[in-house]
Image 1 (cartoon, rainbow, N blue to C red):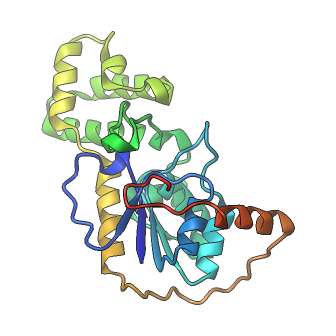
Image 2 (image 1 turned 120 degrees about the horizontal axis):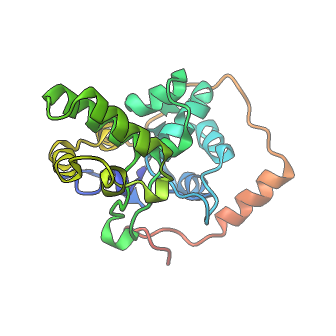
Length: 244
């Protein structure tokens, strides 16, 4: 069984997941739950944080120790993949590799707020990595100049991720209407491109994929075994991501 945790990063994309089971953005315990459900491969794209605890590194290591292939990209998956790559998690896409090589070090660069799972987790704000990617495309097209791109990027970087929208970023700039129109015309999501790359990777894995042998051993202190027992007692996910 192959399981994918995704939401806003794939919103609006026309994707054939095949036999991959789609679950909502992952929270603490969800990857361990997937392992206990029998996952042979896990793709982590989107995850929650703040109000709900984020995916724990320990559960990624738990999955890897169990022989589960774990790949990450685009958003929370890119962050965790860069942090756990040396243990066997697979970073996929430009964002994950930018975190891995240190050229990107701001966790909030992939953060945004989004709507409920029932509506497909539509994004309500713009991720900084997508703004930077789109600005480079706009520059290459010639629709904006270097000074305009620099100012937009400065505004984007100093705007809190929960308020980071192109409307708020360009609202006080000259030619705001034009800049907004051109941004929306050329908008290209790097997060979604990386997410699609991860999905393609997960799809080509066999249902009974066996991960590479590990050179380390997972320690299991009481705090972890207690947490795992609680996760094991959770009710299992149904296909739409809700619990029953």
